[in-house]
Length: 121
Length: 108
Image 1: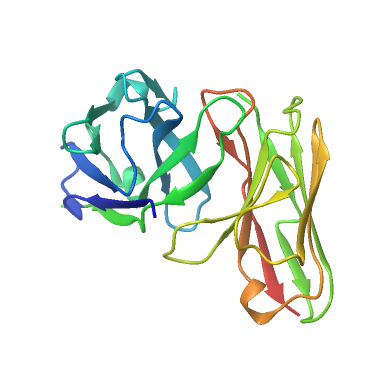
Image 2: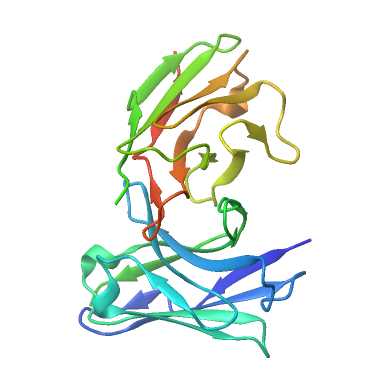
């Protein structure tokens, strides 16, 4: 049974850096068949794709966030991470990590429960 | 970027009745479309992938159809637990992966 779990600070000061980690269990993060994604939902809004990473370290980012975003992977620990710099109140959201298939299998069957991050002083 | 537009924004339906939700893509996504059910504070739940294939454990009252740019999620005989927000997602042309804005299904 694949499980994902987000962790990280729940409160971040404006202009500082938001950092989250997703721990994967029940599957190898070195799988060649999956991407590892970050998605968020701001209060009262819809789902926004942040970006993803492949086991090789190849990343794809949402153009709207690319200048502030870094996603990394640690295959030895079966975890991947998100780093978003210069945050504002607009980055307050419920952040999810999720596993997605490659090629035409790009749906999200497995999600973490989500972690609410609030940007406020 | 492929823009996904869902309609209506809110749908009011009585329990036991049928609900029909629509999703339109700004360009063809073939059949590379998924549907999710989302409750507040919870992770989305995969319902349908490949436009019409039910995910594991999803009841048969959920069905998906469509291809190209126009897709439909139908929920026959609504149960109380089906009242939630539903999102479509395309995975044909990315980055970015894109979602619709959501349809809120509420009890009439």
